[in-house]
Length: 278
Ligand SMILES: [Zn+2]
Ligand SMILES: [Zn+2]
Image (tube, rainbow, N blue to C red):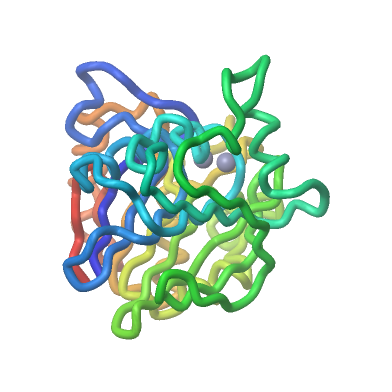
């Protein structure tokens, strides 16, 4: 498979000259098989617009798999030109929240007076469904969905296999709700370890530095150190730090990359526009 990083920022977009090299769009990762167009999109932040560029604005036909419903993972939906056109066929899957249909949950943020149109008013053939934990076949990928700790709404992490390689996607993860853990950043949650176990590529929340964490430990995210510890414990081939804090500048991310050259697992920093073959 090929992993296209279309938006790597967390919480809110980061426009401006200090953010151009790693990119300012919020979470969206596109998966493609065998040199084909992407068919499985992980989250629909503002980076979703970059998928339309990958497709040269041709219609998207596939699935958008949402990890949860926070703005930085959904606000790209109404601006997805390859989805909002005749000929598009878009299935949106989101974690069952215990109440409300999938479409009605999305419409809480995407409908008047908050937004001019509803999800159902997008052009093309759209459908919206709730997903339960467990194993699913989605666009030819084997997908395992497990609930992981985050804040404010049920959140899933995903383990995805294309028949040859496996990735895990835990974009927003807040292990410190469960306690201190060995590093003080939260314990390695059983579901997170299961999702990440022996994967080729782990894409993980790395919003905060260890120094920033004490003041933000209740904000729903992980530290870089936690992501590295989890990757090592799970036997991950390569860790990609993701969901960068919107204030984290390019220069700061460069400095973080340099500091991780001798990390116990290979670590890279997610960069919008990168395309990783597996
Ligand atoms: Zn987020
Ligand atoms: Zn979130």
